Image (cartoon, rainbow, N blue to C red; front, side, top):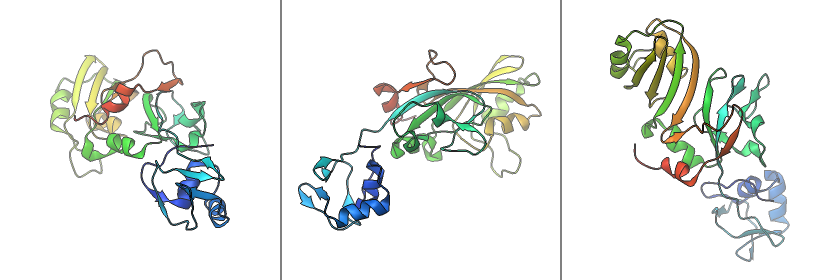
Length: 242
């Protein structure tokens, strides 16, 4: 049975381990036994490069990899954005999907932060979200412990120095919508960045919720802990400029 698709060419033994339940060592035994064919020819070298769309077969059964998967999830508190964790539940525990361990998070959230999380098994797609060079914008709603000073808008636009960081943050857009409530739009993803930015102003973030990544908005119909596949428009928006 097929698993997730490799995004680039892989060694044959690694390809087999990726699209089946066999380990690398088991895959090598299958190759040695002559059980693997490519376009009708028996393969004997586990180092041979194989493309994702190649007609690789195991004893005549096609092993063409499945289409990549793309999901949005409304993350609750107390879940971590990791494949596994010894102390906490992970966002993968919320999924009812085949082979959830093949999925990864494109843009993590802290354990106490809620909101939009994107999951995929397409490495190129997630790279377009998480690479600093791509400058993919994220939008957050937040609540602070103390009233937000109006001067914070200009300071965030200019960029602020975070503790132990040598460079200012990139310009960020802050919209104050209440005495202790705001929306923040930023393109970076430094460690605990939103909390540290407000900490640099002498304030503390007590609630943080991600509403959007790029043009992908969290579906309001999703309750905390629920998820759904992305639409084609949502998925393809990641490749667009800006």
